[in-house]
Image (cartoon, rainbow over all chains, first blue to last red; front, side, top):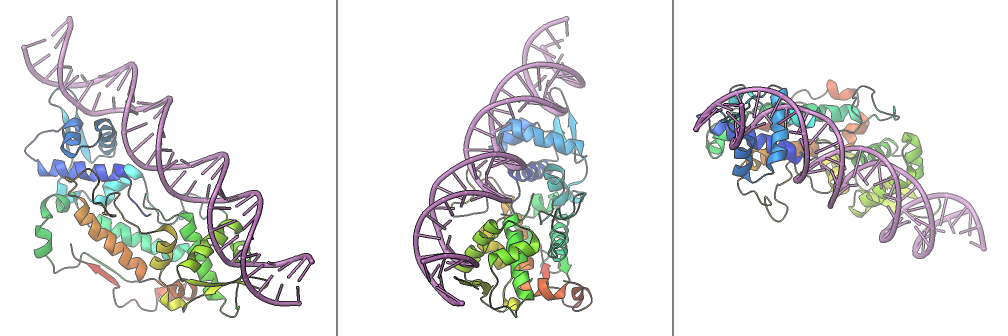
Length: 152
Length: 152
DNA sequence: TGAATATCCGACTTGTTCGGTCCGCATTCA
DNA sequence: TGAATGCGGACCGAACAAGTCGGATATTCA
């Protein structure tokens, strides 16, 4: 459990792919789908969504396709996941409009909300650039400054 | 969307409730279910599962019920969730026996695996005791040592 | 202009999982 | 014996994820 949807995975993979090919003015959904062997039509819808939320720029017509709307460094994994899967909450009850449905007694959600924020923080600290360029590098480079530190 | 199942929620709530009532030798599934207004039969199955994984001790018959098998301080949220929902993985592909199904090109899972570990670490650092007794206290107490720090 | 390549977008199908219920059996105790 | 409880499988309905289909629109190129 606690799983990302495949769509979010696909979205991250696609953005990573775009970040790895900055020389291309645009890549079509099909191009990317073929590169990873994922259903093109499905990926297309995901990319459309990312376009609507402003992470991608699209261009129709021949030689059209998608390109990153911003620098890969400024696009976080959190944004991608949020765009595709919507706002995420660890607990089923964390307030989405109306609080904890019918269990005002649910005193558990307060500590879990903090966990939720922590996870969100972790995801926010990871950029598409990190996914694309780091790969092996990550292991040896930094190793110094912790990106996340939480106090509970 | 990265959500805990309701069962896991219920399980955490139940354990918290048990931790809050150490004076009782045992509480029945119905007692706890009534306290939170959750379906008794469903909670029963959850508690049975927690019993099988060793987090609870059960006693049948009249005045029977469930009790914590260990000190609340030594039971982590991670254990509870894991017992109920099974092993959790952020990505749909993170290796459960056979790696990434049909996408060896999925180079994204390595960084996400680290995120996964981070989240697991956070959940492991939270005990049932924390849920039960801390509540308000948590905010002011520690505030010192960061429980989690990850390098990416 | 027309064909080819794209994005765009909603509706639909299919399979799985989750939440929840039901029923029968085993255990304990008054 | 019988009431209260845990145990555990079978089952069901609803929600959701994954993927497909079909059609509309935009852009480019010959």
